[in-house]
Amino acid sequence: MNPKYLIKIAVLACFGLWSAAYAYEPPKIGDVLHAPESSQADDDRRVVTMLITQFAYPNINYPILESTVETLKKLFGPNHFKVSVYSGETSDIGKPDLVLSSAGTYARMKMNGARDLASVVSSLAPDPNRAEGSVFIALKSRTDLRDIPDLKNKIAAMTGPNAFSGSNIALGELHKRGYNPDRFFSRHVTSDYDMQSILEILRERKADVGVVRTCFLEELQNMGRDVSDFKVIGQRASDGHLKCATSTDLYPNWTIFATPNLSSEDARKVELALLSMPPGQNNLHWGIV
Image (cartoon, rainbow, N blue to C red; front, side, top):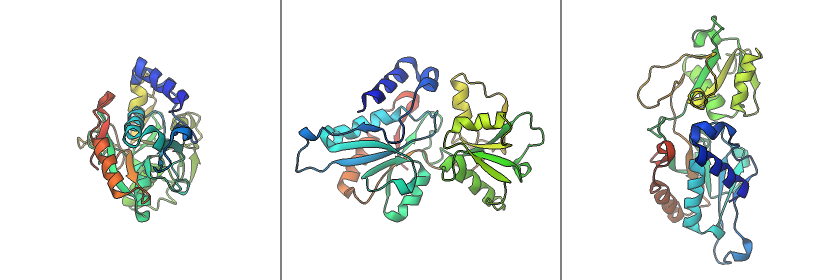
């Protein structure tokens, strides 16, 4: 694994998730988290490749990346396993064997033969199938914005056009309410997939409403960040599946899926290995989708 990445994980482990997470720099697009040493690889065995999305940060799920990479490295052998970070766009997936991404990416890849193997479980999201949604937020000072209909014709800040919880789930909620999601907002402002920038965009009055993922505000608050100037628009009553506010339906958590390049036998071994991993900090583990 990339030594730089190991240092980041070590810092996170030593000081605790909430106290150190904001200083933690997650892996970036293009980072190689593990690569075989070609001089030691066996010529008669293929290298299994895995892609991991660059997820919005902070996120309680991040510590599971290291243990997952280590588990699969042991399964396939360190010289027959490669892991790198990609954008999360389906057009950038290429031909890996495994992908760890959002449930939205998996849904888009099903038509290409993707098979879901497991989704993340955590203390905040104990049900892996009802774990991620979108939250409409605005400054508390915006007394004119009280419910979702009040957001019509306003400027919305989103992480990116293809972001699952940072855009797509929210727009899907508008569609379910009978609105045309393409015409509901007067315009969109994007933060180039940096979810923390959404807060500054709203504070600087460059947008009226922001879209963030569920648990984003709660995690910032638990890390000592002041988010008391924000409110949730259209908050739903809790159904017990998620310990965070949501404005939308809930969908599966981070998901690992196999592509058609991975044999059914290797996919079975991967699923067994993931489900056998012991729970980590914040009860992070892999569960059945």
